[in-house]
Image 1: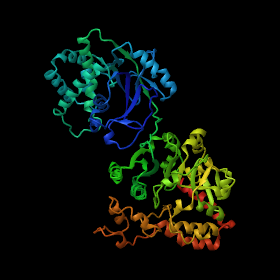
Image 2: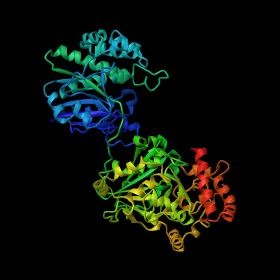
Image 3: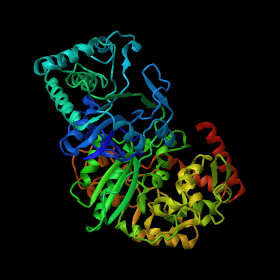
Image 4: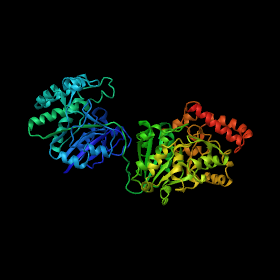
Length: 634
């Protein structure tokens, strides 16, 4: 057997300890479809779905039933750990824990959470337990009264567990009496013990827990009250240890202090699902864009290569469990497609970023790709409001050399520069060209790229610590086009130019009034790309799931047919509920353009007449429009 294996229990993305003796495990994985960068408790023989009631015991059960035995096995939490250091006299709070700021190398060193310190301490003992905590600190006299008086606990549940012990394990009654009448005990369900003890404890614990399920019921309980088995197991651990001490007076027990991490951070990363022929893809969206994300995923499937494996990761921002299950169903019959979810709110750096308009903090999530996926060589990012008409693996196979990314140049920004559009940022209001040169340090503004599809050269970024450059810029100010500007600044002159076919604008209702005024060479390139688009980008406020009066509507709609979002599309496009599931081609749709587009179309002829594009009066109007808007909207 291997020597020591300690598991930390995580119910969400959080910081992992670095020692090879410690393995993070996601608890309740069956109920949470997000990937947090570690194994879950939902494979093999498991009770993962019981996590709301069993708490960390679902990890305990999984390890007991599925993992190879080790000399020692133990459990800690994602923010609570045992102090394996020689110093066991550190200051504690009222709850008997040492408060630490965050998990980092200094934390691990200070509290002995290293391979050397753990091995050294454990070797001399049968059981390592957290130092006993006295319930008198919470105003109670005994462990029994502490359970009875706790806000979310119901003493009748604990009494039922005691009745099971009395009936089936009477040899434990003296230990029950001793623990219940004592004023202190081992709390928080953390321990390290020799495997033979762990195996005996597990059989006893889960036998009682299973029998208890038929003895208790909930009465409109909240989530805290439902954690009944987890709470009772804390007491059962004490009873088991007291009984073992009666059986074996020479049992060697070491009590150590507990720690608590105040600041939650994340230091994990996602691993590739496939070992070969893998095409890693990242898409980012929330529940409002699920219909669009579904269309994109369907289009990826329809254009894939059967001999390649597509590793799709969705950076999700509060996507419902129902929609996650629906998205997973899209790929369920395609063995060369894997679909995972990662919660973008894990990145605490996004808590105070600048947003505007329809943009949310999640738009910055792609800046974290070099950090979260740094074991990959390359990663493709694609916006959710797109569909593809070609196999995306073509992009992955491009030799990027030392370029940091591959992307399509932004012909809309080319127009902004040509027409003298005014930028608005914390760096001031100024013409687009001046903004690109002064703020983004782009001597050649024509090199500005659009971030709807990007191939990240992760291997090269790792060499240059590009991730840190991105985060530094993110914190430096409020940019006009948010993270897209940040990437253009950091990646400037290190961009492999993709053909325009890989990011074809649907036009947003402006196909015939904006794009024809670009340089003629750009306009003809735009027209040629639209003839055979490889990716269609529905950028702007007019989306094909809200109106059919956009270019390439059919390219979107065909990817929604026979999905759970088909009815939603019909409903969105009609003023009244759809009463029959007619083919999209014959569905009568009269949805108007969005209000802001109609207003703009009414006003623009007047603006163009009295303030022509590029004129001083035009720039004057735009400048003060942004100033006034900022005053109103903040």
